[in-house]
Image (cartoon, rainbow, N blue to C red; front, side, top):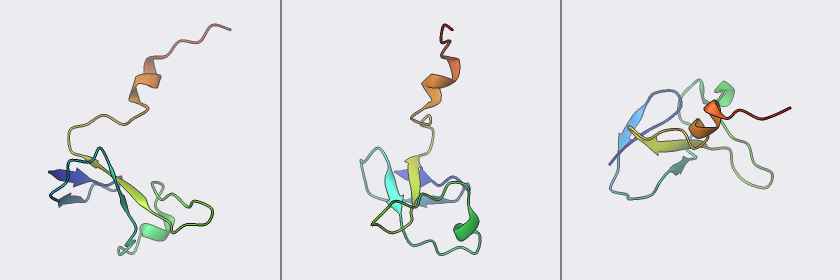
Length: 67
């Protein structure tokens, strides 16, 4: 399966997971990347999602909340 990071880089990995955490942060822009997540008590990571899948919050884009 091919996974894509927020920066557009792709990795082909043997996994059936819905998403993976990329913790290596090996690229120069990783420390300032807008897709970087810095949880309390854990290492920073980027989420890798399978190519062709929608963002998990994509369905909220069309949400119309009454006032």
